[in-house]
Length: 228
Image 1: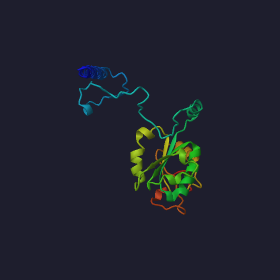
Image 2: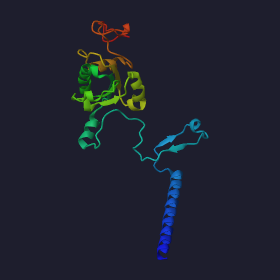
Image 3: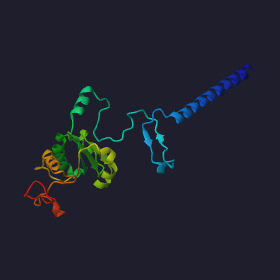
Image 4: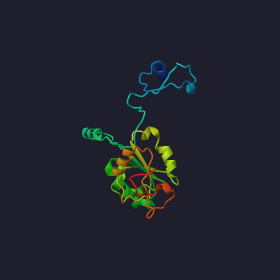
């Protein structure tokens, strides 16, 4: 008899606790739905959400500083020290180079990275052969971003990973082929020419004796620093 009484009391207590927890959760959810105190993103497209013209929908429940309108591809430590913050604030130039690279062109890509990384470039390698570990022995490998997807083209990678919200922070973006030779190429000098001429889209001129030419406009001319 006592055992049954104890079980009955225990059941009543459990039911009471569950009811109170459910009631509290319901009140909290209702309160958040009305106030949204931590919203940082708004949607005002009335056609997309089918609302009256002046209506506005607030979405998200994240604190300020979590949601950003844009980002970049620069690697960042988990804990940003004071010295790292100071170094970051002094860097004014932001450039990006992205290359679709296979392990067979490792030597060529290594030469490209040695030219670009010292000039404050952020680098992304798109591994179309899926081989990422084969690059680990290069000293700069851990300082660049590696993205792997087998049997894809550079434009497949670019459309999916070079999104405007990510690359808009960069002043110039280089989308290069893996087999370009850079023995006589100077990234800084090239950027100076691009800036001075106000060029928005460009590419280095190719030496017809050393490179395979697909379009005649890409052949380097000796009559000036650039041609259209």
